[in-house]
Length: 292
Image 1: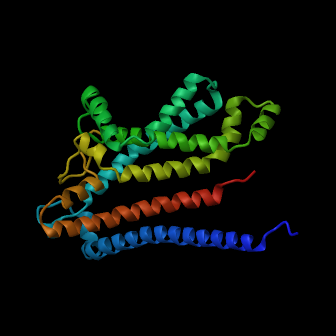
Image 2 (image 1 turned 120 degrees about the vertical axis):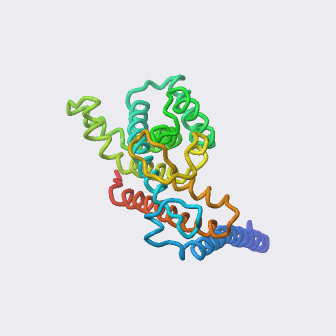
């Protein structure tokens, strides 16, 4: 008497193969749906916006005439914003991650801070806009300046940089750190010469991806009162400003079809900047990542 019923086994195998095939085609359909939507979006934006991209589009200010409208003020404003957002968010984020991973004791208070940082990473951006309006614009009287906008965006991406930096620091093997301590190095010397050099690729990758999110954010800047129409470039960090997402939002809100086509040109420039920044992040990760 055979212990295995071959007919029963073959029927079960056929059933499993059918389920496997259904799952494969279901996942393929989900992937293709996303790619098709993305392709339609790219085609729509490029076909509408590409004819309007010229040298004058980069050198002219916004105008009430669609033929004369340009992106000069938003480009300068975005550049000034990143000059504030990048150093503030990276310095605070990496310092916080180093404290939590290397110095802080593992207790309930540390777990409470860690949980709140993780939750803050998922808070809608408009909430950070309200926070920036209350603290920087009204309480600290920075008005609608580049400093207020840059600090608001720094708060927005700070949790993301902290989490990415912590993951990178945790990836450094404890054996390597203990070897450094065994050679007589202090904790700061170990951080500076062992931990940070190994963690910097991950930290830079997370920081660049976070900054690319900040460049595309509109809601926080609208909440603090950034201008939607200006015809000058900022002179210092206390000047008024506008940014690329705000200018695109302003153009899309206008009833004339020409402005919506110009907005597509602005979206192309914004997408190009995001793709360049994401490509830099991927290159850094591939080139400098270490495997222990």
